[in-house]
Length: 177
Image (cartoon, rainbow, N blue to C red):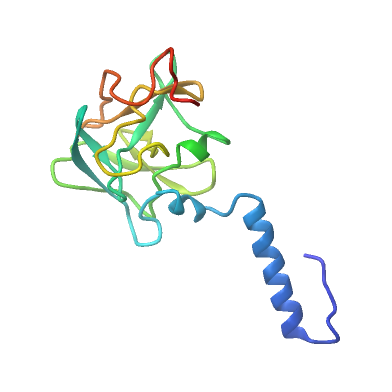
């Protein structure tokens, strides 16, 4: 921080310094808490609860926001992490501790370190993400979307991917991303 003198007014310097830091954090994309505003998770209020809901593609796992959660799978079938610009479209499901399983959820829940520095919920060891194209609970618009080096899948109660393309993308129409 660059010190700025305001006629010896210590309170004014601190306030100006704090304002400058806040502006810098905002300009650089925010801090780890910015994920929660994108539908992140339960980080502020404790461990995230992973639940289930009925969707057009069947019963799928949902995060604390009630929205469908997804994993990214590369062409070899291996789950991979979303990083960098990917996080603007696929924000991580954040948590402040080991996620809790809602009724009927049999997936093994754990945490992973998200690339943005937050603690991310994981199912069967695979990091979980929301899709920015899902505006409400029960939507699976991200199912089958091909973007950011792989294909996105919603998950069943046991944490296994839902097969089929019921969402907003396909190999010829990757959902605009």
